Image (tube, rainbow, N blue to C red):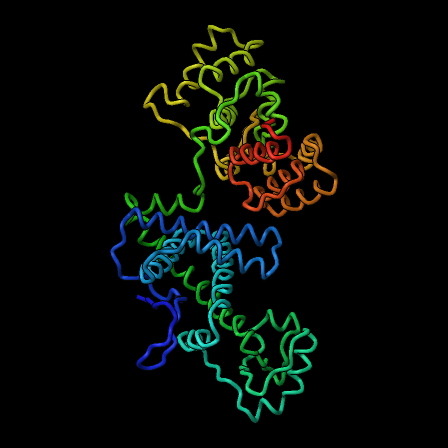
Length: 452
């Protein structure tokens, strides 16, 4: 197993050791089933945070800080060895999770490569050279004589990027230019006779190219093992966890109302206008308009209302009143009341059901006559634009939202809607309708001195 201690110089042999592993082989450890899942979920929080940061167009220095904060919040362990083990175990679990389709592989490869890039940059120069050695890259630093022969050209490249001229003891690596495509496309290296001269502070591009290539091949091999043996062998134990992890919601469940307590029927119309996300606002408007919702819509809106603090008696009264023009009191009590009480844990198995997360809502496929699901995914462009305008989103912000929708970043589209409506940033992103509600109430409270 690849286990590296915290980077330091060994007093006996002055060897630099790094904590950054290459994930060449799965650790031969006995891993508890809970750790198998929990470690993977912690790493997934890091990768999804990176994905959100990239989608929001964060600058390189902002991304570097984001990666540090995400890693500290989710992957730290009091014992250095255990932190390294968690790092390696979580990577291999998610490799298994994300090897299964081309789309999953592409996303995982991109996020892991970005994570590796920023972690490598945080290493010292000595540790970076040690990592290059560990990676067995076939490159050596150029000799002093060769450096002197190209020093002027290297200086021209440095000046073009607004950097200092290379010092006399600067280290450069001579590599085939096709192995550093990002440096070549950005005109950030001197190229001579098919080789690029890569400065020590640029070797991250060289190492990341190798890392990406290795992980890409490893994902294909893992997929073959998964489909040929692992999936069937572990069908009663690991397979259900693996198949569920890539769509797992990683935040609070909002099964109980949080800081803003309860809402009553008399408040619900007002808070629907100010603090409901578009998915819930649409369902709320439809039940008011049609005096009915199909089962999927009742579940999505009903559990959301439960999470924001609508008590069971008020929920029964709300649905009964809204359905009254089309459903008699007797029929409502017979056909609908049981399911409402069931969602509140008062019937059946007494399960305390949780409101739907964004991931769950996005993943459903509404049928004809259904109104549940995610408007950013399921609305036509014309209907979505109209709905955003009704929420008070400006024309420019609508275009920003639609750009995210076209790129299938539905939660980020919702986040931009929140920011446009409230005039306040939402750096954490929107991951749950009930989170949208709580964050909205916080903003309104700070602006007005009381909850709207």
